[in-house]
Each structure stands twice: as structure tokens, then as C-alpha cells.
Image (cartoon, rainbow, N blue to C red):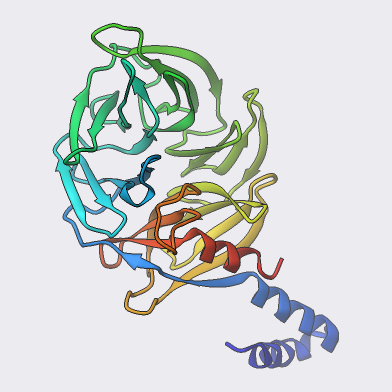
Length: 335
């Protein structure tokens, strides 16, 4: 709806209630400002099984050769290239969360890794990606018994020779595990930290040491590096990601039922705007967003030089991507 029509509608609706014309105009402007639109950039080929989780596996040596990882709801892994073509399918159990370590060094060699949370197997699983030919190999991890099961995971940080993962328990708890190469036949796994949540969480994302949790029961929670709850919002979401958009740090979240992506300020989790992903030049927009992931790392080409956002559209069962630059312009242009 155009601004003039929106203002007129607000004036008409509020006339009987008493607000002044100036107040009605301010309210109409606030509604308009809280809704943003961005064009979808591309859509991937449709693959069987949908996507329960998404993650990025960038290529530090050749940006355009980076991969996008999907966990189909029926199990295993799908790896796509930046053109949206399915490069390989790896059979396996169902995964409810994904994390990647594109710069991992194994015995002195670069070996990109993928980690997945399997609630069915009550375990964290590891995979190595051979970029020559795009092959996925099962990666042996040291046997570790989770204290509260495994419901999901996300990357906490990647360092020299190690990866720290946030592991979500079945109950209201989470842990940080460190996975590293200790020269053994399997990768060493060490539980380093644990903390309590206000409710069980099923998705998480991190930014600069802060951890953001999505809980079906209590909404979104931000926990600081010391494990203390810093902010909460009761918005129910099924997937979330967090990123920096031209200096504005935002949480992007989906509820799996509405057509918008909800955004929140990362510091206090207050609502920022509603983002609608509309039709591009030759690609339909997103009608029912669910799994979502963000990367600021370049995937080459003009559109993806500053990264991209990937969203699974439950309506047509396709992964669709949005240029990070385009999303930044849409989300912060009116701030």
C-alpha cells in the first residue's frame, strides 16, 4: 500500500477514536517503516526432503566455489554450489542442526568439516568434505555421552586446530564442546562449559561470543560469553540467524507459518522490522520461510561479494538466497 493510502486509511480508522491527525500520521509511518521488502536473488533446484537446517561452507581460496549445506528432513546432507545446483547427496540420519568449519586443519591439510546434531542417534556427527569432486566422508569423533541428550547445535567459534560447538540438550540446558585433532584415530571431544536455560531450545546462532537460542516454549534468548541471560523475547520462532548489516546487528528469525522474516535488534531483542522477500526478475519470492542462515563471507559474483542469506521456502520446497548487500539496504535504509 502506498504511503498516501496508508495514511488516509489510518486517519479514517482512527477518527472516531480521538487521535489527532498528526498522531494518526505518525502511527501510519511507523507501520510502514516496520515493514521492509527485498527481492529474492536466486532459487536452488528443488530437491527431495526439504531442509531442516542450513549452513554455509565458504571456500577461502576461490569464493565462487563455496558450498551451501542443507539437512533434508528425511536425513543426510545436501551440498549445493552458489549457482543453486545440487552437487552431492550424502545419506545418513536426520539432523536438526548444522555447523561448519571451512578452515579446519587436519594433519596439516585443509579439510572443511561439517557437524550435525542427531536427536534420533542422541549424538553429534562429523563429516569431512573433499572439495575435489565434492565428496562427503563420515568423520570419526571420540565417543562422548551427552549429559542431557542432543537436540541441536551451532558453531561457537573456529580456531587454530579446533572447533567449539554449542550443543543443545533435550531439556533446558546447553554445553560448549571443543573438537580438535589430537593426533589420534578419532577427533578429540571435550566438554568445556555448561549452562542452564529458561526453557528447552531447539535452534541457536552466535555472534562475537553471544549465543542466541530459539525455544518453542519461551521464544528467543541471548546469553553472553559468561553464560548469563542478557535479553529475552517471547516471539515463537522455528529458526534464527544473526548478522551485521551495515553496522546494525540483527537477529533474523522465522516462525514457519507467516510469510515474513522477523528481525530483532541483537542487543536487546526488541522487534526491528518485518522483512518480506518478494519476486525477483525470474524467481518467485518466499511465501513460507522456515530454515534460515546468514554468512558475511564472499561467495563471489557481483551479488554475493558480501555474502548471502539462505532461506528454505516450505511453500515450494526450495532453498532461496538473498544478496547480503540487498538485505542490508532493505533493513537499514530507513533507520
